[in-house]
Length: 87
Image 1 (tube, rainbow, N blue to C red):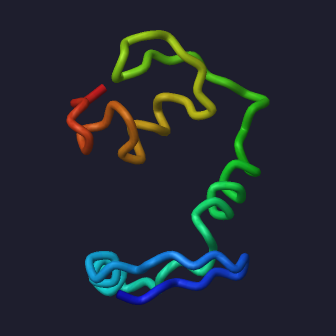
Image 2 (tube, rainbow, N blue to C red; image 1 turned 180 degrees about the vertical axis):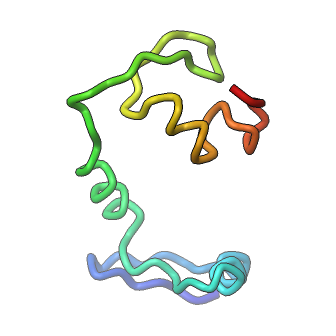
């Protein structure tokens, strides 16, 4: 088992299963630590415009940063990809 060394100094093991996945997808292993990737993604959240929708799991009403049309078009919650059926 090899280890991935990130620029932050963090070292995480790379399992053979993960290595096969990266080879199958044709992409290199990540160069940034998972926490840093999440930090970058969260920096671009849209909190100025929130959309009301119903949670597919609990059925409760919630606020989402993304409208339902985008979630279903891209294979998110409620789409046929995840077994939610057509909307």
